[in-house]
Length: 269
Image (cartoon, rainbow, N blue to C red; front, side, top):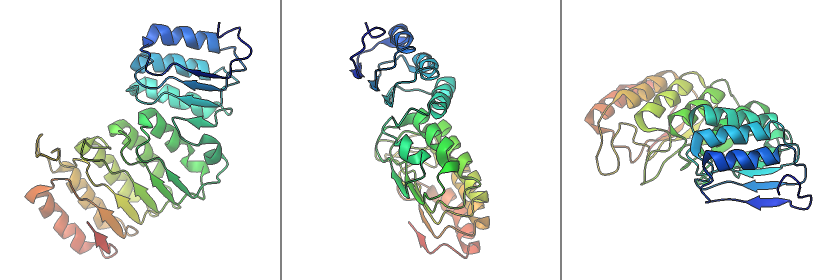
């Protein structure tokens, strides 16, 4: 029906457990559809990574959709990468996972606030892909988005050579890390070691040393030590928030000499 219906402009199949077979069917029908403008497949609807690949294939050829939502589908790996590439390659898409693609492409934003939007790994990969064209952007919040290590790596690599962004918020919350814990923070450290533009970074509530808010988990100081090493050489950052991270004595010991060597930081939380 979707393939031949010429009047339908908006379709929501959110929270419907289509799984990969159902997702494939709907995406096949949409490949030649030019009238549907908005598609909502959010809420564990598409069958994870396998379903995401079908959505990516459809977006590669569909010329009608302007708004697509696949949030909260636990997409990662190749599925996330293929989906992000398809969105970036489809110039008709104006909004993806509540990310304002149209405005980002037009470089009309100075601030991008996606806090708590659940953009997912695929969403942050799209943001990372558009960083090079947003020369006017000075502030981004990707807080509370379950970026995981994969998404954190993508955004940090995009920011390594960026000189215009000044404020980055990738904080988590009481429910868990946003950046993939101690694994993700290593990518943040790598970025800090070479980025010369950021002046403010929020890493609060991210289980940087592997422990949650109750002290559960396996402690490791590797991530915070990497941050400390980056702070020794970073000459731009003036404000960093490391609160609610159970850094422990070993983490504090790693930070102390780095902070003493850094002559730029004026606010540490």
